[in-house]
Amino acid sequence: MEAMATEDIAAELRALNSTFESIERVDDPQELRARIARLSDEVAEPGLWDDQSKAQAKTSQLSHAQGELEKLEAMRSRLDDLGVLHQMAQEADDAEATEEVRQELAAVRSSLADMEIRTLLNGEYDERFAVVTIRSGAGGVDAADFAEMLLRMYLRWAERHAYPVKVLDTSYAEEAGLKSVTFEVSAPYAYGNLSVEGGTHRLVRISPFDNQGRRHTSFAAVEVIPLIEDTDHIDIPESDIKVDVFRSSGPGGQSVNTTDSAVRMTHIPTGIVVSMQDEKSQIQNRAAAYRVLQSRLLVLRRAQEAAKKKELAGDIKASWGDQMRSYVLHPYQMVKDLRTDHEVGNTAGVFDGDIDGFIDAGIRWRRRLDKAALASSGS
Image 1 (cartoon, rainbow, N blue to C red):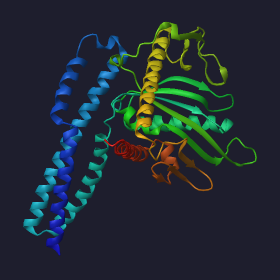
Image 2: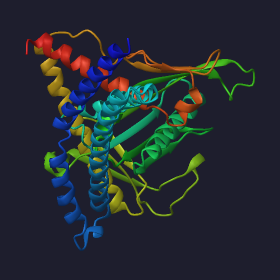
Image 3: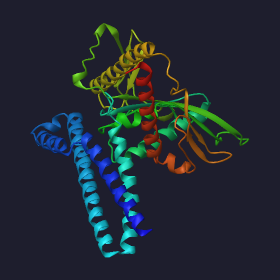
Image 4: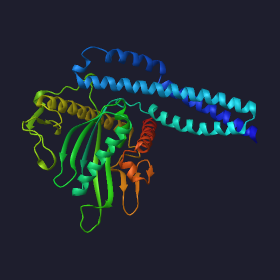
């Protein structure tokens, strides 16, 4: 019986090594080392911090590459050590050491599953930084409060991963919460991860704004777009843009700026509107608004191309739908993703940024959809 268990452990070790080798083929350690060397040289260049946004992007890319390489090297070491420990336990016929191997196998299996998620982020823009916009929907003041709860959730998620975040624009609601907010997550693969968060989110709870303590349902929309890069070549004729300037404001309309530094940029052909008030000068806000407008036009172009492909491929069963996740605080506690069926009962943890399980499930779900689309088109 023990011999059979030992054979099972050996087979699992081979399977885990095979999984890790497939991960290494995507996250090539040699390529990572070359990228780290190149980025290290670029970060050391004099005058890099003259352009702060460029400098932050470079240092974030370097930190991410170093972290990825460390994870790969640590996993290779764990697997090698596990193989040695298993061999020693076998030779000594040591039941205690064999049990230690089994426990480490389970831990390695879990870690490899997390690492595999990264290999699924191979879309055209998945490696980009992300620009996220949250807008309150139906539900009045509860919806505005929900939008603010979602903002905190994503900020705490980014904080857990040490991802730099910058709030670009905030529109406060009259009574409480937010009408809308836009923020940038400056980390490699931020878009690939957060893109699965796009859609309509629903909150069910006893409203803190209802004197009669009734249960309310409210909605908020989350939009995620990849940040534009210089190489994307999204040219916008000046005649297609209308720019309005106004004073930045805080909660309840309170003025926080005595000059017209905030910018509202409208793309006339599409009607897309971008507001920016985080920067200190009108010139900076105009540049930031233009960059986000380019990103939204890039996404629009991609959506139009996808629509053409879908028309050629035929209708594919399964879609994101309007309502993608429910957060229920009453009469029971549960957060459930309606696309992936992933659910948890710890609602406080979710609102505190513990959403990696939902993101991972969403990435796997999206991969299944992509496979279905390829199969439907006969590719």
